[in-house]
Image (tube, rainbow, N blue to C red; front, side, top):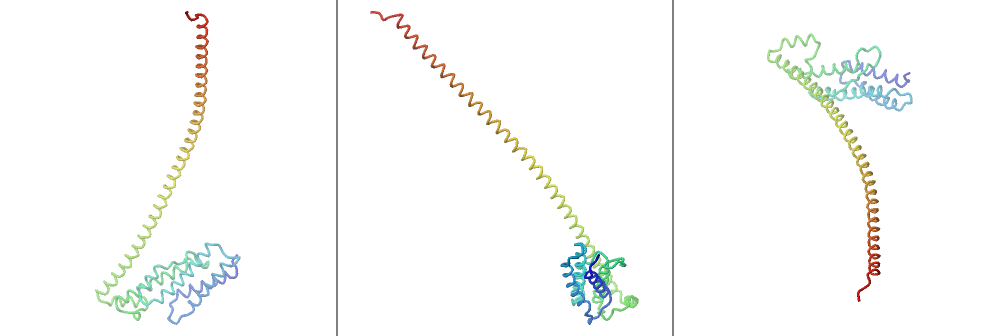
Length: 257
């Protein structure tokens, strides 16, 4: 269940979106005040124990930032700057109220882009802000323009469409680049994991070989000690036999006089 603060926030947000979709004059001050109040309510909503889910809060923040950016873009003097600022605005992704088929911020964004495009066209054609009226009047004015001015308007539309296509192409390339980077990172992780497994197996094999070498060294040392002992005993026996043989020889064959 939504808290009382969230219900008031949604009502004020819906009211701001409704005001933003209308044609406003320079003396209109309500939207700016309402957006300031929305910021304060959003901060309080984040601190509220009964706050909504993080995804909902993110969408609320996105819509408030969109309205702030829209107000800042409208304060710019040049139509080109307004159009450029509108390109960087990010409307909300979900409807604010249940009976909306499409998020109101997206509708406002499309209307704002259309107004900026019209202002740029009027500036290019030299008609200024005073030349804007109803769509039928604008169509009649365009039909009454010289051929070169109509061509200039068509070229402006082509340039805007070209920039839009370039932005979409750039976004696709960035998405593909991110996807390739992710695939390369995963492949590198798999290779590193396999190398680590191979290194671990090599270290275990090296430890096993070291233990075997140590055992064989001890056996060789024992065998060497046994060989030295047998040789020593053999030499002692040989010396003793030689000594006894000499004694017997002397006894049996006395020295000649």
